[in-house]
Amino acid sequence: MEADYDVIILGAGAAGLAAGLYTTRAMMKTLILESIGPGGQLLITDEIENYPGFTNGVKGQELAQIMDQQTARFGAETEYAEVEGVDDLDKPLKVVHTYDRDYTTGRLIIATGGAHNKLGNPGEDRFAGKGVSYCAVCDGNFFRGEDVVVVGGGDSALDEAHYLSGIVKSVTIIHRRDELRATKVLQDRAFANPKMKFLWSHMVEEFTGNEVLEAARVKNLKTDEIYDYPTAAAFIYVGFHPNTEYLKGKLAMDPLGHIETDIHMRTKIPGVYACGDARADSTRQLGAAVGDGITAALSAYHDHAA
Ligand code: NAP
Image (cartoon, rainbow, N blue to C red; front, top):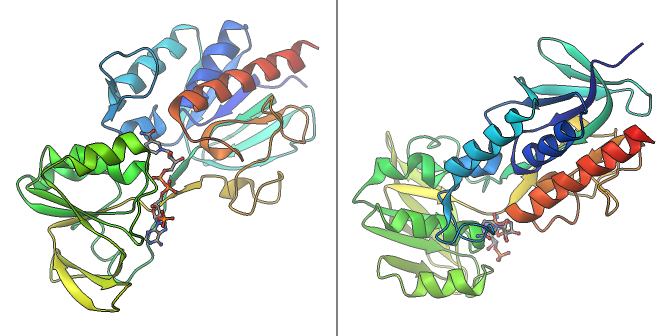
């Protein structure tokens, strides 16, 4: 029996779209399955300054649109459906299950990326959408002219705090250590920003309020003092986890659920590849995700043609 597609790509983020660009140009019949919309993390990123080719940076949503159109131009089909599982990965016809139907494919490229972690604190779920957010680009405008906090000390926290500082009255970064993890250039920009404040060595114990978020209950880890820090919103950027739950037990993964590959993006199962934020040892950079996607596509093509 012939497969429905030569290759199915799971996820239309930067890695998946780059992979699709290459598989379609290699004349492989390609389907991209995406649950939300093309762009992945690009959709929740404001300004991208470190993707080569854009002297003055580029907006995440704009780049997502360009990448999607470029891939579609060469004939990649896209279906919007949540992938519920995969089967027969070691067989010539690999099966992908979605709610509506099953698809078969000769090659499978996994590019389902990841999502921001939650803090897991009391109040976090209760105030989600009522002050607690994981997307400054989506929700920042609701808090125009107000005081907000950002939790975390990595690149995401500082990037998004910078974006928010153009909208809100002040941004307080709440970080559990007294040193940031973020890249030096982002740190320098944050320290020079008059709207940015820092609560060093503090953890958020709880989010409090009535109808909407009113304060972050914080603990000073050096003095053990606990107090309420008033805020209209809390943007949480405390790391990232891969979207690979639906593949558990089917592929080799690291303890955090990233899929293991070789440098050609091949997993241990022939014909199955992983790329971008979902794979182990990814640098989690946009340019690297694109490179991964291209490498996965070339490997899939090479194995297909062999
Ligand atoms: P990250 O680098 O893992 O940083 C997560 C931050 O959250 C760290 O500062 C960590 O504190 C803190 N944290 C973790 N768990 C916490 C908890 N339970 N309570 C309080 N704080 C907690 O994650 P990220 O910033 O999302 O970045 C992910 C990857 O994407 C990185 O490789 C990054 O370089 C990349 N990225 C790059 C850019 C860019 O190039 N502009 C932008 C965004 C993301 P500690 O520091 O104490 O561990």
